[in-house]
Amino acid sequence: MIFYKNTNRGLVRTIVIVLIALVILSYFGLNLRSIINSEAFQDNWDFLTGFLANIWSNYIKPAVIFVWERIIRPLIGGSGSEIIGIADIVSATSSPK
Image (cartoon, rainbow, N blue to C red; front, top):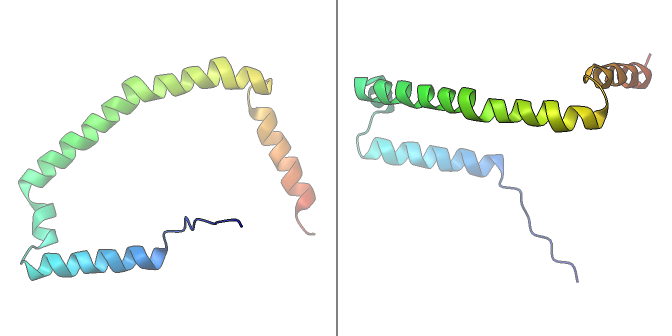
C-alpha cells in the first residue's frame, strides 16, 4: 500500500488564515495602516532592506557568480548564450503555425 502525503497547502487556506488574522487584529484595535506608517516601522524597514541588500551584494551575489563562472558555465560548455539560442529554436519549432 502506498501512502501519499498531500503537500499542497492551498491558496484558499492561506486566504482564510490571513482574513482571520486581520479580524483578530481589528478586534484588538490594531490598525495596520497606522503601524506601517509609523516612523519606528519605517526606520526598521529601511534598516532591514539595507541590511539584506548589503548581505546580498557582499556575500551571496559574489558566491553565486563564482559558482556560475567556475563550475556551472564550464559544465555547459560556453557562455550560456547557446542555451538561449537552443531555447529559441525549440520554442519556434514547437509553436503552432
